[in-house]
Length: 386
Image (tube, rainbow, N blue to C red; front, side):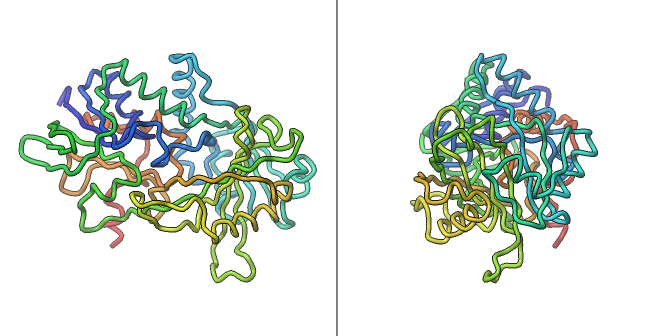
């Protein structure tokens, strides 16, 4: 198929970038979203996202994020907007924990500039942080922060300019595969195409129709905390910081607690803090409380230990969603027994990859071989395990 028609359901992180990549290839593509991106009903909102190249989740992701960094810079040139600002990125945890060891392994494998630091060295350099004794850190000296909603708007604008047809405030009700292609039914009409990409994030589960669906939707309570007077918590002074902490002594959980903190940007929205794991399962189509008692308690305990200067500071809250896989890796590829229907789920760490994900998915949708190792993202891997 040299030039197939494609329908993309969902115009957030993966959907917007795939529409752009397909349209640039001259492929006829129609994108459909239940809302009007950028919006606050999914996973791409929240003002800022981190982008790092020394990747603690595994070195296999590094070539992808290197390419994504280049493509974010291209998008800046194409739009004349600032989308990515550079800063350091600090990963804190036990020396034998997966976070710091994964960071160091990928940094060394790809010669990414970095430093290894003790707790005392971190605390001297950034006294606003309080790294507990026994933990260590890795610093990627040039990482970045992406302006999230601005990025999505830029991707969609460039996709339209390249020829993509984008339809918003239109909910997909169902799809059906037949001998002559895919039929997609929305609350406004019926559309047909040769290929379909399900990139609806937290709402992919409702569109899958699989007997075995490994995805779960998790709510992330995000806190924007007003820092105390001064510059200690502002961008350019404080690096992005990611924490992997032992469980609390009185907790029944045996696993690490993970949190992240992004410094205050010039927009003045506050210091962004959220838990990265131990997240509650939720239904994204049901009303969500801005914060629960458990979420508040977990955040307060983290701040008291690691960022004490933010304790008892005024805060605002919002909720976004992770579309989680059992192993925390991406889920990319064709559905079982449906080679013309592809799925994309990003497991809570996909935003930074958006431009390269668009290229990868465009390749898969047009029968090209992507230039990256996708073995850890295979759709059938959970079936193989069973």
